[in-house]
Amino acid sequence: MQSVPVCAFELMRHRHSSSLARLLGATASLLAGAALGQTPPDVEEALRRSRAEQNQQRQRERNIEQADERARQVQAPNVSLDGAAAEREALSTQLPTESPCFAITRVQLSVPEALPGSIRALGASALPMDTFRFAQEYLDQYAGQCVGRDGVNTIVRRLGARILGRGYTTTRVAVPEQDLSTGVLRFSLIPGVIREIRFADETLRGSWKSAFPARPGDLLNVRDLEQGLEQMKRVPSQDVEMQIVPGELPGESDVVITVRRTKAWKLIASLDDSGNTATGKLQGNFSLGIDNPLGLNDLLNIGYGHDANVNQGGRGTRGFNAFYTVPWGDWTFAASANSSDYFQRIAGVNQVFESSGNAKNAELRAMYLFQRDQFQKNSLQFRIGHRWSHAFIEDTEILNQQRSTTFAEIGWLHRHYFGSAQFDLSLAYRFGVPWLNGQTQVKTIVPDAPSQRDKFLYRIGLLDATLSVPFAVPLSAERRLPLRYTTTFHGQYSERQLLASEFLSIGNRWTVRGFGGDVTLAAERGFYWRNDLEVPLGNTGHSFYVGLDAGTVSGPSAAYLPGKTLAGTAIGLRGSPVKGLYYDVFLGWALYKPDGFPNRSPAGGFSLTLQY
Figure 1 (cartoon, helix red, strand yellow):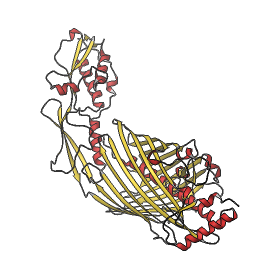
Figure 2 (cartoon, rainbow, N blue to C red; figure 1 turned 120 degrees about the horizontal axis):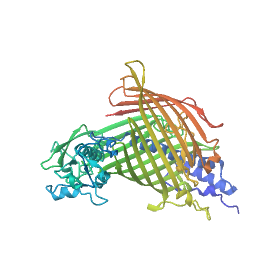
Figure 3 (cartoon, rainbow, N blue to C red; figure 1 turned 90 degrees about the vertical axis):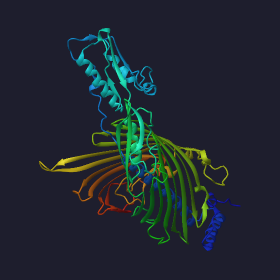
Figure 4 (cartoon, one colour; figure 1 turned 90 degrees about the horizontal axis):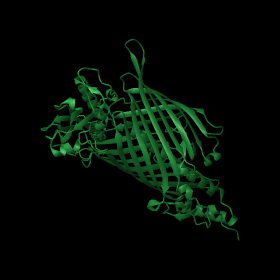
């Protein structure tokens, strides 16, 4: 008696079938193959193409997710309030030579006794962890010098600049009456505190508390106010301004917030040709965005997508997605979920099969801003997500392609400003985990199947960096041509062999342009580098751009590829001809590809978005 081949066991679980005849045909093919000890060619090809389509769908989703995440990070609002002076002057401790002057053995910083106890406590500087300990340490450097009137004023100015550079814009330094002949130089610190935070319009719906990390009674730090304004400006229909108004007591201030709002919802319809030929090139999407649904400066977005071919030719896709985010001071929380389905027809030698699949994702994310100044911001990001996926041949599930996996990720997000240039960096470590019933083995009924635990409990390092530099080229004595150069680098590294769904892939509009995207190069490790030069066409709202990209992949699975490297270029036009209508159209050409790598040239594409 001959054994039944492994592939015959892949089709083991049935869901309801819309075509009993096709299901019986597929089953008959399996039984015939089992009797002969081999998998029928039709079924083997269907399994191979189904597996490839499932992996390609996941890799495409990852490319889109990474591009969207990059866009969110780069386009996040930035607020830099006036008064954040540089500390260059405070770096020096040299004092002017003058007469008379007094030899100083000790410099003392204290809070006036006349201030309330709660304010005096905020200005303490005796302990290493006290907020203004840095000010006392700075003053200690002047001990041993001869100080006159100009010297005292210089120290006050320098210390004020240093305090201002830390963001304490309403904290002041004063010089009390004293006798310098004692050798002790005394300064008074008047801490700037928040008496009240309020809306200018007291009838305004919503709360500032979810956005601002500061509370009444706290030291007034402009960095906390910048963070609060940015959190409120994340709401697209909300523009925010702020004033600092003096309070009743010395050092007290009120923060008054002025909010201007427009329509709190938007409808977006889009059409593009970013899909795969096998399941439908044209893709349509509809989404509803609701701003501030709970009055917490939160955002809710719900979307639906479908191939625009309307299932023509026995192929198609559809999907649902939802996204919600809410701030809480220095924290930002987000939850997302999506579901996608695809189906296609696979022609075999003797019959045609329907291959289909579905995937669901759920993710929670938390981001914590732990440092910011006038030049940079640094945050930690934590993510956990679960993914379910299934693949079918004629409504019969392919058991060993079933996935239920969990991942966790910790990352560092950094933004830095170099003049008008903006640099965004993300470093992350992602790992597969067994949490939430995360799968650690391929599901199969074959006994003694080899372990693939390392593939499910993977370790991946991720790097994403974007630099955007606006500049201008002189055309004449009075005219300059504004340009913007943007460069993006994305890399992935893993020492282990990975599931194909976790590969880095290149060769589409999100990675290396100049390629159609139906066929990509994908493996465990690799990177791609994108470069764009954008030229605005006057004040028309349109701009021309040219791109140059390159990428490479490596790792154990790269041995089965025709090559490892791609390079391409693209030219395009993007803009908004009328309010609410946006477009992007481009043509790309391959500059380098491996022999035997299929590609059409030029590889064009478009996207059209209508927002109401």
